[in-house]
Image (cartoon, rainbow over all chains, first blue to last red):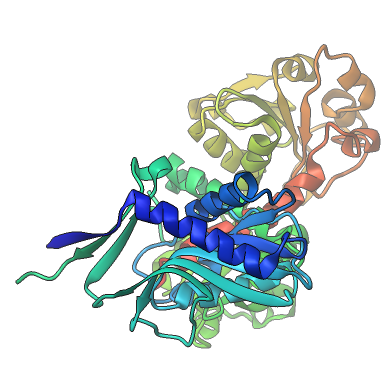
Amino acid sequence: MGQRVLLTSKEISIILHRLACQLIEKHGDFSNSVIIGIQPRGKYLADRLIELLKTEYNIADLRAGYLDITFFRDDFRTADRTMEASETTIDFVVDDKKVIFVDDVLYTGRSIRSALTAIQSFGRPSEVELLVLIDRRFSRHLPIQPDYRGRQVDSINDDFVKVNWKEKDGEDSILLINNTTA
Amino acid sequence: MSELSVNHLLGIKYINESDIRLIFETADHFKEVISRPIKKVPSLQHITIANIFFENSTRTKLSFELAQKRLSADVLSFSAAQSSVKKGETLIDTVNNILAMKVDMVVMRHSSPGAAHFLANNVEASIINAGDGAHEHPTQALLDCYSIREKLGDVTGKKVVIVGDILHSRVALSNIYALKMLGAEVKVCGPKTLIPRYIESLGVGVASDLRNALQWCGVANMLRVQNERMDVSYFPSVREYSQQYGVDRRLLESLDKEIVIMHPGPINRGVEITSDVADSSQSVILNQVENGVAIRMAVIYLLASKIK
């Protein structure tokens, strides 16, 4: 088992600023756009982006929430263990809004498929976009691609991408962990 | 701990505190789900559930059905009154015929204590006890404790008095087990004839004076007098019962604190509580009904996730 650093703290910071600028380029003052962090791990990335947009780019009125997709997953029947849910906090309806899903890693695309179904419980968005920090290319099970990506990674299925956040894991870093034994 | 320790919910006695906490945490998520504009999740779209009610029920049956539909399960509902049970079919034959239609879970209410156990031991399906005679009614106790937790922040350390017909009440027994497991202090209060002997062995106190009991507690759970289970007369008259064990506004106002009033329904207005108490801000009766759906969604979801 080996691991290598995909992104350092400094690189993550630069990428977050770039992603924030790309969002502003598309969504302006966010008057008709909402950011939805996909639970559990997309929450941290969403929080960081929201903080940046508010403090560095003066987006004052930014609506955001967290969406848990546990009850919308397609593997309830085949899962070995009971799947534990996280909190959903969306205190607005998304009718005719531009929704930006935010998640840390895009892998098979199944979580985003679940999120696309789950968000319908809160209305009918005019548009849904996807922002991810790490896009694991060539691993998709479904035709889902990100609109904004931090870094694209070529990895095999035995690899595991670990995203560490300062507030949860002590430091900002992204590691590629290889589980295959030589 | 993210899994129930059991494959069936037969009674509170057979689960543990971690199970109850897990059910509450899961119910928190489902409470949020049922407050959404669209209140349905697709988790159980591959699961079929039969609701078999050999006894009358309004809110429990509706609550289970709604919980199942909110989880996208396929639901069969069966009432004994319109079934072949009337033609002499046995319980096992009835249930096995239903299971032959590929049913994964059975929610059953039956007048015989132990009926749910019997079923769990004899058929291949996950069983939820929706009330078995005067034995247990676990989902009612779970939603009662959940409602206390919601209103007062926690159940641990709270003082709860259960008032009325303890002898015939499955709600009382399940509530006693659940409240004690979660660390509440419990007293029962009612006519001596309706308090089971040896009830103290469950770790509960017995009070004969209602006013003193209400003054002691933070929560009063008012039970219905179960006339349908009474073969002899346990008290002289309904009027005398309501005078001694009924709660009215005047009695509540004579206390030096505000207590929470609960009732599992159906209410006999003017007997165990008066209308002005049932409809007051101290009453959480309708919250109990609302929480019942979330609790039953949680129980069904957690049990269904163990079906292989």
